[in-house]
Image (cartoon, rainbow, N blue to C red):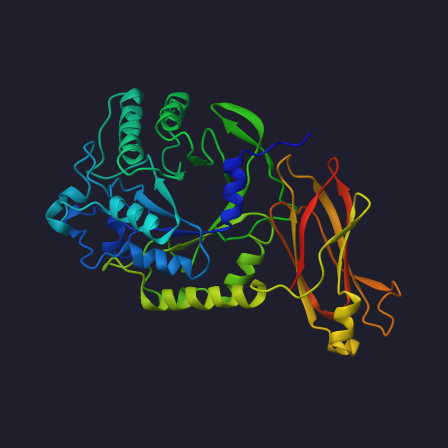
Length: 416
């Protein structure tokens, strides 16, 4: 039985690429790692050149449609003046304690036209951690801080929970989720408790194949089968927060591979960068994003001029050059090389395709001879499947759906 997505989930899949920003007190303590026990004084937080719009302009270089910032990581330091802790920007030198990074980030998202997402870790450690005498007090603190984030900054599109480090606490999931949904009815929740999206299962930027949207997840304490598209979070460098090791930056080839095995397998790609102590994306990272975005555009920015997709029967689709186009091209050897095909499945009634094959007609002198070769075999399609194969000149490409859950419907087939 298919699981049907909500309109919010379909919107999420259309975003395709997001940018993750790990920024906070850890930015000013190089070499520190999660749970290392090293104290980090709030006074050190002082990003004198903070420019969140510069972050978002960098995100737009790779076509990002949304951005997420760590409002509070496991160390407990809040990037907004929270009344529930003294360990926040209020205790820092930055703007004499009167600054609010969350405000600047959300305003920058709106100014640059990106969806605004906030990361929040309920865990905390160190001498600055808030002490609780009961589980309810912990939940009250959690709800209090989340309420500040969801009422003080206008519409928030996405809330990204990180459960790491809070495994020993039994949260009142129903109470917390009810409050979130009341404050922001249209918000998307990542992975925890009432999930609209889910973690792909690694932090390397790759989705599996097949990549079904149907998953069994914890929904308010019960295991349920739901529609939950995966998100592939990953890092531009070795570490999440600002990484001074320039040698660890990923190459364009590796980034393209991650793009083709995340977005190209029907998931979203969430690429992380750590802004530096200035509060800026460093020049090398910005340059790599520009190169990455340029390569995405080079490969997938302009489809080859095949005709409109045609359907024959319930499970066969094709695109081909029209007779007039072939006349204009002249010699069949001048056909453009095809290296990839992008497919999209209609998902309003759920995901259907389970197995498919792509065939290229051979570039013979008789383009309607019917002789063809299989260039790709795949499993799920979902929002987008990028099928990349050795270059071939072909006047026609065929898609055959070999196995599906009920009738499948393909809404896009383009060659590049």
